[in-house]
Image (tube, rainbow, N blue to C red):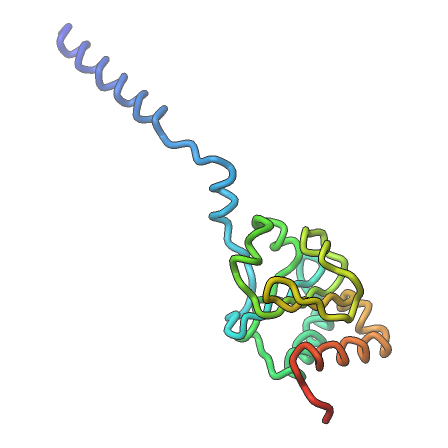
Length: 161
């Protein structure tokens, strides 16, 4: 019986060692493993970010009309909320290597520091950025729709029709 006790004691010690030797993953590595949640196929390398948790139907329809006007659909873009974007590391966007980034609204993310002026295109490290008002604001103002369309024509190299 003392042998059994010793055997059980050794097993218990090894179990404790096993449990305590579970690797602790540093926070930086955890952040890097988080993937950006987005809709779409990102086939054309276009990242579209909107303000808020999700799009209301009216704003969703407006956005898809905008995308159609520049010959894009959901398969061409990565569509995400600023809330999803905030869950990944600041380097995540550059690692995605988008060709174009379109930001709708005043999002809370480091990327907003690139913004100089709404409806003007900024080139940064091989990526073109376009910052615009939120979709709700744009939907209520024809002048903003016009300003957005003008900027999108430049961004997507669309000649007047």
